Image (cartoon, rainbow, N blue to C red; front, side, top):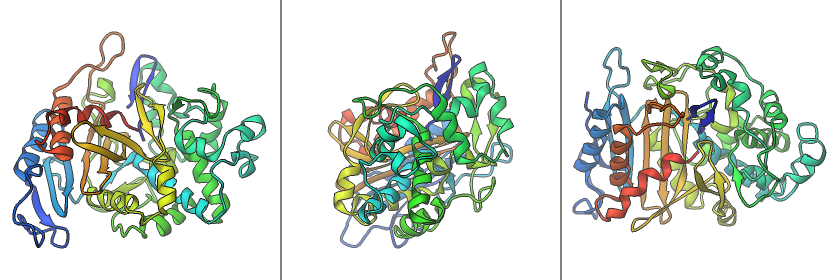
Length: 422
């Protein structure tokens, strides 16, 4: 999820490894090229991708790993460490908490139910969940409004992590092993002041929306949201390392995940062990960069939902993200347009200590998934505004190479766009 919200003057959103170029079927053969391809394209340079990733590590990111795909070629790389205490190296195979990328999975599951006639996009949520969303709000807020954040329902984070409003990270530690119930978090969002009128022209990002969608999914399918999404989205996409966590610990190889909270936690603290009930169907998935590229390739290729449903997902509206920036958001999909490079679809997510970006170009030929294990590294000035950090420039260069290569100078703007996505 994107947890960069400004509360009480605090922004709370929010060793060098080797990479490889491979054919998809042979991921462990460095330098392999798909049959029919004689050399990497000019916009796909493994050496420059690795150099850009190393630059992010040198700038202060403990560890970063990624997978980039271009017309059948695949590069996976990593730079830095998974554990700053032991120096254990990070690797591109590692599991990551992917935050609000989970929203795309939840949205796809909802659209499947729309295809089966169990849900209507423009039906009031009160028709399905009258006890959770009663009264006028239940009659005015539609399923579509939840999906594209135009519901006017506030986010629950301020209530779930109250110390952030006081300039303290105490709530992060208090909630490490706390088991939240979805209805408890939803009530926090519903009782907070509305962010706007339902269906207004400008949406306001809210994680409460996607908790309600998780409850809706359970209501119409008769099973848990986790089980339905696993069987009908994750398994349909052929993902091998994407799961909803069943406890506070990540199963399988993974990095430690360091939260700096804009200098409030110094040195940054590891939050890789955490009960993810605080984000459930909105941002709790664990995945890998390889799985994420595969998922978005399948989704945008019409393999997860029908083409008509995908068209609905790609109908965007302007939405104010939790960090105050305006983004183009559809139904669980974020749109990023880079002049001279193309239009990309995907999502971006952060949780405590982990940040992940996954974007796929409209034609499906260029894909980028990047994961890192330090978040909110910027210091705050006296007014509470995050200050520029060398990591920002290094990530800009990495995203430029990953999305566009050296093909167009305008691509240097790429990092500023997706980094503010939810």
